Length: 292
Image 1: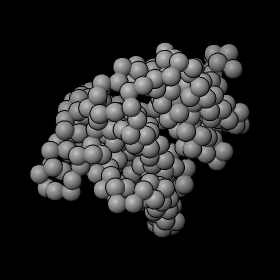
Image 2: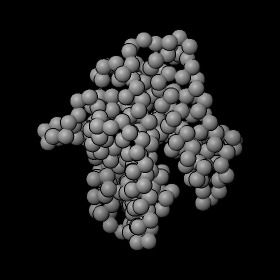
Image 3: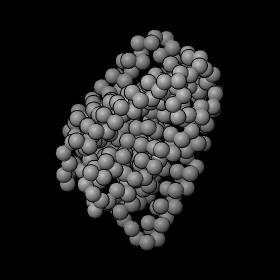
Image 4: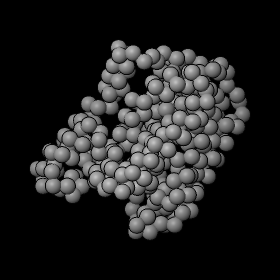
């Protein structure tokens, strides 16, 4: 398959992911408990976004990437242009409105709005547990995305040299993230890599497997032909694996200190490993099977 081909089957995936995140954030404790617990884990829309990002960036740039100043500047310019203008506008509007109505919650309890604005504008807040939800709270995921965008060309070049890199690069990233936690959890600095839960759930190093699953899917699709199969085997299998991951998270105990199943160690494994496997297989089915 060509890298610039339009894939109709994935057109609605972003919308589905956005709706999942929307219902997650507007979940209400007054809902019937089974519904509340299901919606409580609809943060999985973020996983759909991360897998899809890994897939689309790899599909588009894997064959053409080169480590040169001109290529990298054009690449980064294109990536930032798709995200940053709207994010900057929303961030400035949020801080301006918060200042106008004197709502300090946007600053996350910090006394310096200028510092928090700076951390938000430059995506730095996503590395700090204490700051991750400041400003436009959902924007923490953009720090994860931007980390992937900056590193992706180097991943592609290394994978071209040795396919084994596809397996050990995520291990290196997870190991680096863990090392950062071991170091900086002993030197508290606004929650900078302050604990393993934060690292695994809110940083690229902890969530790199989701992007690599998308990249792996892209490499398979790039080598495939345009034929499709009638029986939706992979579509159903991927959906079942993803449902298993969600079910594991829903089954985890929650309380005031652990409000989501994904905050439990088993929940983290389900979200970061089981779910992206299911999502990737499901995406493959959508593209290669006449299922939907």
